[in-house]
Amino acid sequence: MQRFKSWDEIEPTATEAEWKLKEAVEAGDVCVLGTGDLPPDPDDWSSLPTDRHIRADVLRFHLLGGCSNASVTEVGVLLIGAFVSGQLSLLDSEIAWNMLFHNCVFQHGIYATRCTASKDLRLVSCKLPFLLASGLKVGGQLVCSGAEFQKQGETALDLQNAEIGQDLILGSAKIFGETDLNGLKTGGQLSCTGAEFQNKGGTALNLQSADIGRDLFLSSTKNCGEATLNSLKVGGQLDCAGAEFQNKGKRALNLQDADIDQSLFLSFAKIFGTADLSGLKTGGQLSCTGTRFQNEGGTALNLQNANIAKDFFFRDRVAVKGDVYLSTANCGDLVDDPDCWTDEARDGENLILDGFTYRRLSGPTDARARLKWLARGDHWNGEFFPQPYKQLAKVLDDMGHEADAREVLYVLEKKLGAERRKALRQEIERLRDTSPALGRHIVKHLLLGADHTIDWLQRVTVGYGRKPFRSIGVLAGLILTFWMLTLAAWHTGGFAPNSSIVLTSPDWATYDTRNAGPTPRNPADHWSETTIPGRDWESFSAIAYAADIVVPIIDFGQTDAWAPSTTRGPAGVILWWARWVFMLFGWIVTALGAAALTGIIRRE
Image (tube, rainbow, N blue to C red; front, side, top):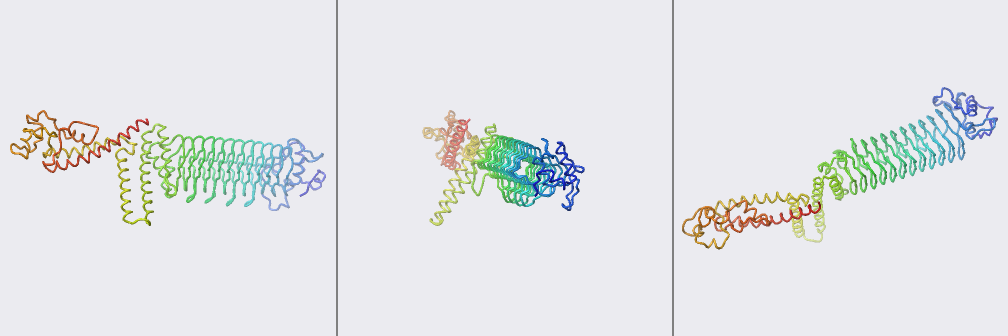
């Protein structure tokens, strides 16, 4: 590299293009070489057309201010359509004016480590191997839109800890090799719309700990290799809509602990590999509308501990292959389509919902659809998590869907019962080495039988307290069953008055089949309906008698007046013993129903 200090040193070997550049720089004009279009890559850098050839050392001479007979105006150096041969080194340099290069082809890369540029630096639609500019400071914009950097397997664009006063523009750029923007700080936006970051097997784009003053646009980008954006801070929105991140089997998009002041858009993005958004914080929404998360056999989307201040969109043909972690994440409105979470093609993959909280549902609110969603996310490593059911029930109840909320809690109680019995079986099995087999079987059947019975009673009678009016139906069923037994006993003569005075009276003795005299087939019926002595006795009603037996809080007077007889036929004997069973069930159902109903009333 030759360090020119005056034009006199350059003049003897100056090319036609270098003379033209000198004149343009002195006049504050743009230097357009050839037709101004991007020249093709030369076959031989030692033999370049003189009308487009500028040496890197000559270009450096002008960028650093030139000399008295080749001065630079405040406009700076504006160059279009040049071949720049040699290595352009601007290490630790201070440049007080604009550096604007358009459609230029550089033989070697640019070294600008710790360079300070007071105004704009532009490499628009240029081709060069690399730009190594860690610690670069630019007072205005840094624009590399449409540029192409070729350093596959190494760092092609290095802006570590660079400070850009305004915007950094990489729109439509193609970078083959690592793009290292670790610790970058911009006063304006960072726009990479339509850019390509290619570094297969390594880091394609590194924005770790970067601080973007305004918006960050990665929309429609193509990333081959990991996009590392962990601990990123964005003063506006982060737009990745339509972007493609490819790093199959590894982490494709890393947004761990990123802090986005506004919204994060992943709409219609394609992510092949893990999308790691754990610890993400947004002041606005997170939109995954139409996004594809593809990492079959691994983690597709990780949102653990994420905090989304507003809406979380997960709908419109979202496609997921792989595990989804939402544990301890939080969002405002959950705007989703449950079918996106419960795709049948995802059998064997996991949806982890434990600790996931949201304030409102803007998708379907019917219990049936939501329960399918919960069923895919309530287990992890064989452990059951009830929190997702509690969370859904709370939100549905707050939104006014009380019936759906109760259905969710009802299903939760069923699952808790099944998990309790599963744990009980495991506990009993652990006694295998310390207790006889017979003892284990007895304990197993007794404990499990008792648990099953209690669980069945609560489920059938009051729906675990969530469906208290179910007890009315159960009581009605008991009454109807006992009513049929009562009718059978009555019509076969299996009833008698329930009064010692009547039973010892001469008039009743006339109808008692155990004594001589007139003996009707059904003395109780004859006594209560046709006889003079029994005309004022309590008339018998089979349905009222059944209600008296089954419902303890009802008294129709039937049990005080009539009772089944054990001496007048088998129907009476059966009814005599059956009434104790029905009385017991009646007490149980009534007590459970009353407890559940008063609990509902108290909550409401």
